[in-house]
Image (cartoon, rainbow, N blue to C red; front, side):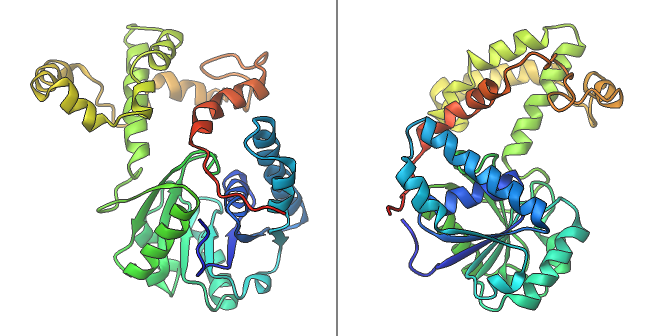
Amino acid sequence: MKLESINHISIIGTGMIGASLAALFTGNGYRTTMVAIDDTQAQAGMSRYDDCFKDLIAKQLVTEKQARACAKLLSVTQSYEDIAETDFIFECVFERLDVKYGVYELIEKHCHRFQALASSTSAISPDDLCGGFKQKDKLVVAHPWNPPHLVPSVELVASKYTNEKALQTVYEVLESTGRKVVIMKKCAPGFIGNRLQHALYREAVNMVEQGIATPEDIDKTLMYSFVPRYTSIGIFEHFDYAGLDMIVSIDDYLFPDLSNAAKTQDFIRSKYEAGNLGQKTGQGVYDWSKVDMEDFRMRAAKPYLAFFNWSLPEE
């Protein structure tokens, strides 16, 4: 449900995250502006925004009438003067401090009444972000998962300067769009989800390098064993359900044999150094040259469609 205290949301950046957030906010009735660096990025952002709704219409989650109503709430600009009176800002620019600091300087020069600034960074600590922002008490990391208009999880991380009002504003804005928001007790590299995800990545690669299993069989095991369970119950719930005595017994036996690699393993690094980056180059762990990418994209999105819960505006 749209918050009465937030009339205008601004998104700095028109990439995949920015455009997806624009779909999320307009899809829940918020007047939203995307800020682009030039005409090319403005057009690309609108195209990405439109693609979000094409998929939702195809899945019969949104009607064409509702999509038109959402689109009327969106504007795109290259001028920070157009967001001078915005209530809430989401920064979604490139993961470099100098780029973000440049954006923060423009925000502080032109925007005079925003309640909070959220950064979508997936890597940079909020304390480091505050190094380029004078209104440090208003800045919060709000790390979404791609694409945020479908994936409900958002991780909030306050800096040592963040005040409770700004943190609560970010929480309430995101919660009003149906997001499942968590507030970390303290900052850690990778936040919550990426720490869990990359621990899994490390052991998957380790098993390939040790000749234990192929990438295909590891992927099959993940898809058809324990991963689907964790969309319905949590891992600590599972601990209790299985019995902590069994968890201790297995962990004490298994942990000494698991990978403790401190950097990217050779199986992945060698492909990276050879320029085989995956889908974007056509070759990675797998050969992507004959993969139907539209089908792949829809399969990747499918688990999250069950979470769709927007409060859509009507014309």
